Length: 283
Image (cartoon, rainbow, N blue to C red; front, side):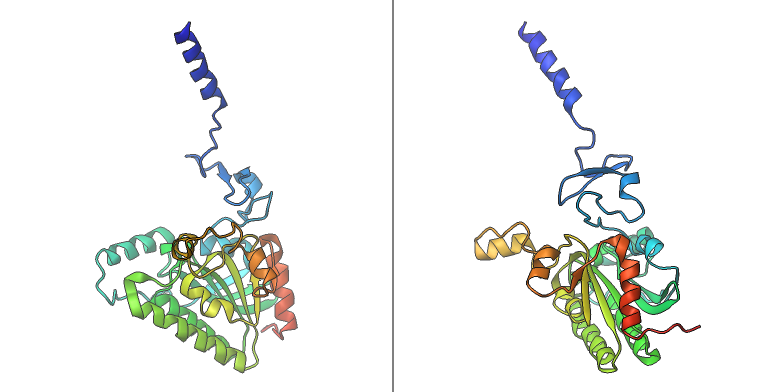
């Protein structure tokens, strides 16, 4: 009798187990939202890869974002590669693997973009490339893009997604914070519009520099925006922080973000802002 009851219990347990319990099932048909825990099929997530329940934008590559964001894009500086300035153990191999996996030379995609008839300079940081970390080439590509936008008097749109400065490049990485911020300041001084869109996650040195220095700061719903991570904060202060402390909605309430814009509204929002900011059709 006991054996029967045990077998029956195990059988019931197997029946009740949800095959979608993990963040992603093996065939990728379902995803669990890390914010509201809703489970959605690939069809429900649609091309935007956003949770239909709460609007949270799942982490996507720069190239996947291009598919729904712009109508035309010409990439810049695709031949630049890091020289591994510190000869950090295993870094060259890690960099090569990221380049092979993403098809990018570093953690940001930059170039000339067009939505309808609106043209602008666009940079998209890629969280799938070493967690979007800020390296020397990332900073160089961003700086060149902004400087070219200043010279041609075009607006700049930057999508941020980063775990912070790339430790394998040490001080060389940290220097990029000031370099990009300086280029952005000169762009602003020239009377040109810059827009930053904070996506999940935007943290570390990126948050501490150019991510918060544009004329207009937008964010995706529930995006993680902060400097230090939750574990670092709690280990340092010996206090548990609020679960939404670093969510975009809380950052908005404290005045550091101008508007939260879901992915399916970003095209229209950017066009409106760029038109107001004086962006003209080149054609």
